[in-house]
Length: 287
Ligand SMILES: [Zn+2]
Image 1 (tube, rainbow, N blue to C red):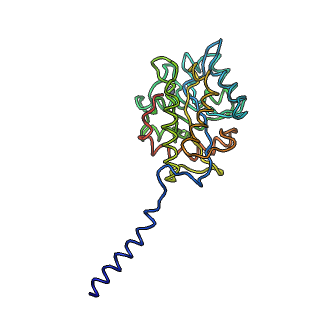
Image 2: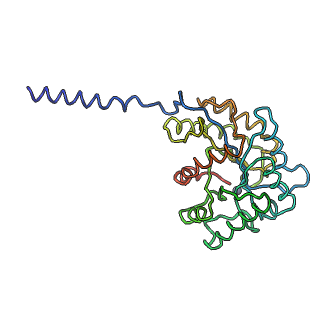
């Protein structure tokens, strides 16, 4: 009898211990969490077009739009691409990005285009990183600190080379897949993608997986500045991100977008290490 009572007592104690685990947050419950702010990033440019330049239009929209004036971004550029950064127009736009307070990061720095870093012999990757750093430094007077590899293709060896050159890998949370290489077309699935990715962000925030920086949670968005649809629709995309974030149950800061280089660096540094560990989850994107 005493043993039976003891067993019941132990069971009850066990049940009590189990209680805290059963009152964890529901997936996606972000109530009481800090607000989010979007870190806008753009890959593949700058455009070399002499008329209706998409990168110039994007810079204009970031500076002045109905949601927040003076939004700043990271542009992951292709400094030697013959159709993008390797042109006089492209170089002028990279200077303009810097002059207007945006950050430049490395995407590629080879004349043969959008080449995967993991397919390069490491000495060649080293040379490319040195060239990318030198290109951006000579245009802006600043040494780039951030890198996003084409196709997001990276591994332990390439990450070690990025770090050896003082570069932090930055991936993202939201991509609207506006950068597909098989032609730029109307992005009819942009809202569906934004919804799915923001719901995923809400789940991660509820699980405490995204870092808080200065009282807000940075959420990284990837777009592609050479894409004419993106250039035309950027203001609408920004509104859509705010709207869909609220629909996903997220609090959005009264300044929804990061708006200074310092804010961007704090956010990118907080997320840089994490990018490396979650690369396999995010490896779905096409860039
Ligand atoms: Zn790319």
